[in-house]
Length: 371
Image (cartoon, rainbow, N blue to C red; front, side, top):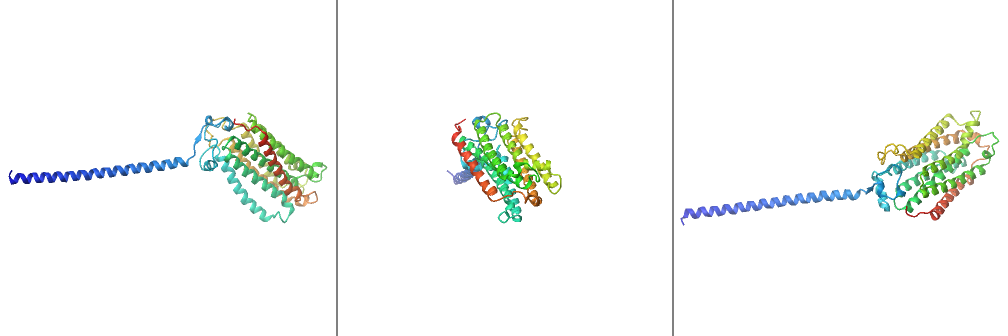
């Protein structure tokens, strides 16, 4: 073999080695890129899985027991038999309960700031005339807090659902009783011979009895879950409202001079609160608008949302009306039987305990089997 041929073969082998090295390097680069792509896919998948893990699982109406279903609401239900943590996580996801919960959380915060402002001016511990207004503020707060708890935790189990809403009804009954207190002590008619408006014990005793009866009637109706449940509850609390606002309504009918009547501002707030309560109750009983467009208002805009929002606004106007009467009608009310610790704060505490007793009795005696 000539020297020239030997050199050519040596160059070929060198070129082959170089090509092999380039190929190996390219292969390594390809492998490295594959690894990066795989890692990126894994990271993306992991991130996605975390998002999926953070999001709670929602189901349709046919995936929950009939007892958990709401009329004309077909989607965005939370799972039954859920944990407490699951319920808390549902606060930050769009379900058919989200507006119910947040509407009263926000209302509670607004009311707390308002009450701090009001009672910094009118100190209930220095002036017994403020006792009923303080009780009414407590009634509003307890109603909102129990409502939030009921709508947040009712998916934990059938029994938990019963207990949650039993306490919700009890809180509404306490609220209506405290409303009766403020209307009686600040807004009742003067210079009249109507016995019930001149006997605090009689009026407040009847109001307390109505409170207990309302809680029992609503608990019983809820446990049976009949088609007229909404009508029964609305009728029960409408009757309670009529009795507890009767001092104000009677005063409007009988007062004949400006000094004994509520101011125009108070009457304006009272009339608005009546309209808001009537609108919320009517929407709830008729199940409007979800009845008209099934599935459209599951998350936002169904009747229970209107009930919560309108009643929160109505309670604010109601508080404004009686606060004005407390200030403006004080001179005409002081000669009459007035508020004391016993017939306001102590009695409210007893009504709270009485309603808790009704709830516990209902929880023990009513049928809470799986439905």
